[in-house]
Length: 363
Image (cartoon, rainbow, N blue to C red; front, side):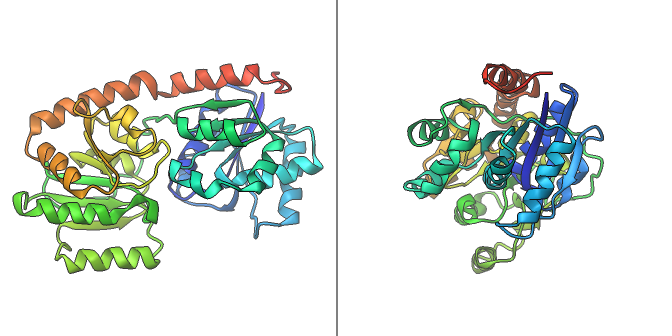
């Protein structure tokens, strides 16, 4: 079997991490595993295994004819039969199929369910779905939507998975006191709703003055970022909430923290959640995407409604005040991750699905 993963960038993000993970996982299980990055390289490049065939396409714009030709030539040269296109990279994959019909396209949809209303009436996505041999959805809501709206019928819900990487670089030292840190791994963008976290911190800070909060993720220094920093300053929380930007040594960062959070308005199946669980960190989250299926309320974390800062604050305070409960929840979520979201479990399910698809050639 000869499959390549396509992703637009190697900046640190959930879809990007999964593209790299699939390329790495498949490299030891098939004849050829490749990773094509279309627009921008980034820090995740260090995570690519040596036996993955890597190609940077240098795509300049959406309708970049020469990039399409380079990708076609790459596929022909390496006798690639299947493209697994992550998120928006399905567009260039379909362009290639138009001029190189033997290619089969698997679309890996990583979006949160909040994107579904925006897709209603999106004729372009319905049109391109004619070109898909199969669709992988990272949560059950996306799977159900694809079955209702798209023309490809080979659809599977396939959970994200996590692999312990053993970071080579352990450079990020978080501020604050050991044993009293809360972590939010999330790029600074609207759907992650960091503003809810700031409201929560304002509510709990008086009772937990020694605790600090740490936001790690890409900071584009845009309007969202500017408003977030202004709100932190307005509430006099500059020495309580720290923003670090994008970091490579996420395992090292997680291990320095005691509670992990999600304040998102929308999620699919965030890879950060799986990383939290892998390292036994109890989670407080809003009820988005697949998170409630993993973070079972009262068993391995707490769940509250989207935007409910009061309930979120109560849940977080409960964990901050009880070390034994934190340890108990951490062990429970670790067990869930190993049983359901490990590399072996997911890749076995992936191969079973692939083998059922017609015209996906197995060498």
